[in-house]
Structures are given as structure tokens and as C-alpha cells.
Amino acid sequence: MNEQRQQAYLNLIRSLLDSPSGEKTEILAANQELLDAGFVQTVEEVAQMCSQHGDEKTANWLQTLAMQLREVLNLDTKVDLQSLSQEEIQIYYQFLMQVLHATADSSGNSQVVYPLLAKNTDKLDGVLAEILRRWGTNTLGEAKADEAEYLAEFILSFSNLIAQFPLGSKASNMEIAITGYEVALTVYTREVLPQEWAATQNNLANAYKERIKGDRADNIENAITAYTAALTVRTREALPQDWAAT
Image 1 (tube, rainbow, N blue to C red):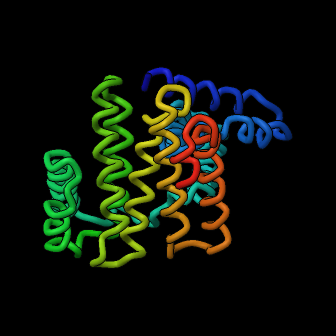
Image 2 (tube, one colour):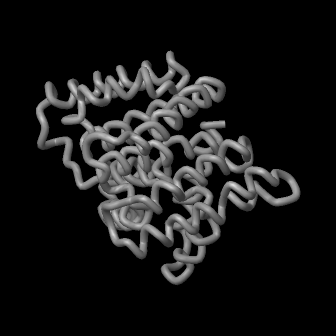
Image 3 (cartoon, rainbow, N blue to C red):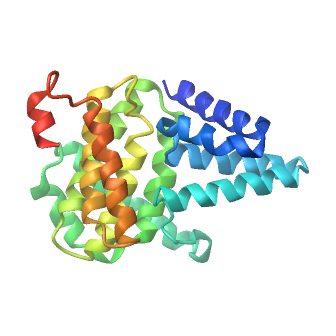
């Protein structure tokens, strides 16, 4: 499943590169299902390969596309990990692993996870969101289908918990939650896991609605987009209770 999505990312990039300038926006609009954190990272990786092969024109275009998508998708945490020491990054990484394991082992029990978060509110920031994005996207992209689904499940559970966590910075907590939902959606696709995809879209919409950072109008628009996406699966006829809750 993940290999298929990775190939879909690459196919979309190839279509964009092969198309005239006037058609690129239409191609992106027709493939919104693929526009997520995983696609942005793939664009960045292809840009790096193009640069290494001396194709700077293509590399620059792809890098610009990645930056634009990060802004549109609200993926840019404005955190430069290169400004941190390896020791600092490792501390954040170890904490992320600790809290994800606690989430998985407790089946998302807030009485287990919240005390751990409360002791580490200094780490609930954009750095953690960026490390979650990079680790999650890379790990899920390399995992087998069943393992990826398992990992996505507790990333989603952690995102739900951090979105409701009452301590620390609410703005940062919501950024971490949104990042987790975006990462989970690289596995929870509409084609393969429609109900999980719809539930995650609904949670993402709630997070955008409560988001503090970014432009308020853009956040509301993103929330409406995610709610609308969820309702394509959570129809009144098929899932009346979920439809009513969305």
C-alpha cells in the first residue's frame, strides 16, 4: 500500500514536470487526494536528486512547489532543525518515542499519557512537531502495510490526546496534533481505509477549527475542506451516526 502511494506521488511529480505551465494548477487540483505531508517530502527528495544531477532548473521549481504546498497545507512549522545540536534533537526524539510508546501501550489512556506530557511541556513545541513529521513520514513510508496501519493508529491516538491536552501552549499543541493527523493520512487513504480516513479528516477539521497559528480565514477554510472530505464517506445513508457527528 505504501509503495503504491509513493509511486502515485512520483507519477504526479512526473505529470507536473511534463505538463505545460498553464496546466500544472489543474493537475494539482485534480489530485488533491495526494497533496499531503508525504507528497511534499517526496517533492523535496526529488528536488535534491535533481540538484545532485545538475538539473538546477527542475530542482528550483520543485523546491518552490514544496514551499508553496507547505504554506497551503499548513505543514510549515517554521522550525530549522539545523539550528539545533544533535544532542538537542536526540532529546526530542527520545521523548517522542517515549510518549508514542506510552500511547500505544495504554491504548491512548489520557491518565497514562497526560502525566508524561505534563512533565515535558517544554518539549511541546514546533521542534517536536517537525520531528514527528519527519520521523512519521519516513517510518510509515518504509513500513509494510500492516505495520504502517498500526503505527498510524497510535500516531492518530497521540494527536487526539495532544489536541485536548490542557497544559502547555495550546497553539503548539494544535500544531503537533495537525502534524500527526497529516502523517496518519499518508496511511489512512480513502481508497484503502475509508472509514479511518474519514475519521481522521474529521479530527483534522476540528484541529483546524481550534488552530491559533496561521490566518483565521485559512484555518476555517481548511476545516471546511476536511469536514467536506469526511462527509464523502460519512454519508447519512451509510453511517448516520458518524454523519450527524461530523
